[in-house]
Image (cartoon, rainbow over all chains, first blue to last red; front, side):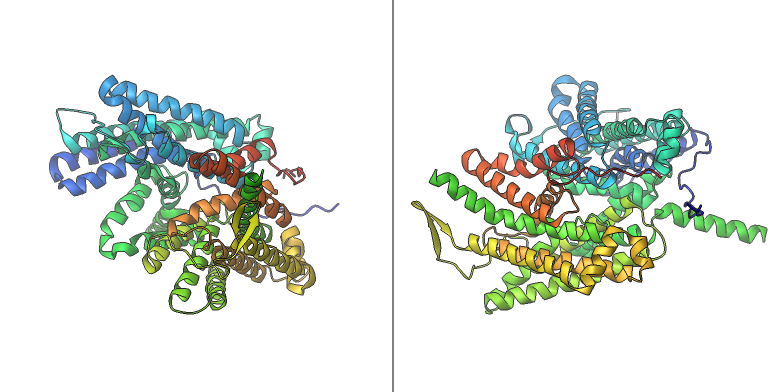
Length: 329
Length: 293
């Protein structure tokens, strides 16, 4: 048997270098405060920004799942729905903490069961399995009328009141605070043994095995984390909409969630925020395209997936490298 | 008993459409390793083009021909697009999945704009004809569904077994590097695989539109059913996909007939998940050993 040099592996796009963990949360909080106190956007803009923050929270877990563990799920709308419906049902009678925790617990239970059952499969099979899971979730939402009230959904959900703010401003403040917390956790995870195990498992499964990393267990952990962040994001989406409805948590929502970290650049620490701005805010401001905006968005997603697999991060890195060369050369 | 037979016949008819959807997915998966989440959109495009051609006053066969040509053209374009980045470097699985999801979003939206969002039905050439089963009457179109699916499957099978291009496709399916070393133009074969998948989807869409009214949003459930059919057969076996599709069709018809519509909608996802959990290699497939490194 002859020895053939294996082709060079692409350099991992996920950096494991240490950042100061508070930089990102501090920037997010600062920008949030400036927006709320100085810029004072109109009601429509504030609503869009809040939705961006809510989806960014949900996407943090997805960034971990896709970027760190390298697993694609098309069923995370299920966890958004768990958070959203738990909030809509429990927030007013039982208080916000119970509602938020209930959603997270339901999402975690589903994620652990589904993860243990499906994550030993190869990538495609897992993606198709989660697609079926999401489709099943939609059927349940539409038909389990005693809990979800079917197609009509649940209204009168109430929202978190913070700092004496009311209405959308208060939801925005809550979303920014939670986003800062989740971004801190993302950075903490990246340099933790669990996070490093996920990244090794993604880029080199045999090496991970040799290092004693249980790849399928780290994948389940990443899936559970994505469920937690999606449930919290879903609770915020429900607050913003004033209730939980099946259409909010359809497969389209799962696709948006999947597209956010990819557009941003898988595993990049800013991917959830940058991706959410592009995926959630851009269609709102593309309304001049009218009914074609979803088509344009789909084309954009396809082109990024095929020709810019590193997402916006790739552009940023290219730009930074070019500026650096000019300065030194 | 006649009622059960009635549901089975209906189920086989609808199942043959799922079988074709699964056949399209399997063809592309075997040829290029891609999971195509836009397969349902090929079916919708075919169905809606045919509805509009018939609406313009032409017959069923010209409608079928137009639909097939339009969908094949779409498959050709998409095949070319998806082959471009694969020429020089290996593309990540997750990225390609997202690419096909983007295609699905675009096609669903465009179909909605061009053809309207309402479910539309295509008049069957056999409208008014019935097959008696006991004292129940099955529309003759269900027989046409089965015959059409058998014809398409036979044609795809013949193409793979008895043409030079089919041989090259099978070479790519079994090993891309080996096929390339033997002189197969792998990129072109990927385009061919996309086109076949689109063709199969287009025919299936035209066939099903006479039994189930088709709206652009139906693409996703049709695709999920196709995936369920493909996965039951092991994702790489065309015959397995056909068997899987028929099974799901019959299961859906029985669930819808004896239980209720909610359970009917849940059949395909539940079957898919059950097979993935219990027999990941497919009900008919062999469990393949995975080579590490």
